[in-house]
Length: 108
Image 1 (cartoon, rainbow, N blue to C red):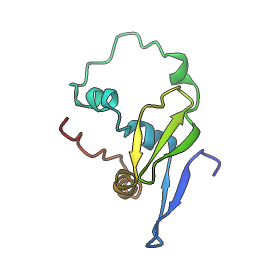
Image 2 (image 1 turned 45 degrees about the horizontal axis):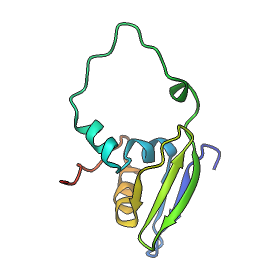
Image 3 (image 1 turned 135 degrees about the horizontal axis):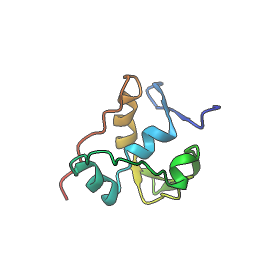
């Protein structure tokens, strides 16, 4: 796929496409879950982008974790999220909507 998206064909023949942005925004690591729970700060008067915010986001690698999950490494250097197959399937439902619906963070 030209946009760097990955496609998963599930055992029930459901096809789901996951963009790098969808996966990165829904990262299940502790730090990202904590960031999503923080109140949204007002935008700064002068927005200065970090280099990783200017570059196109992509997936560098995707490695299996046992038989239940994948660790995904992104071009922004982030690689700590472990995406369970259950979580990927849940995110697949949001691929069909016009906006990302990240499931709420599980209690620690």
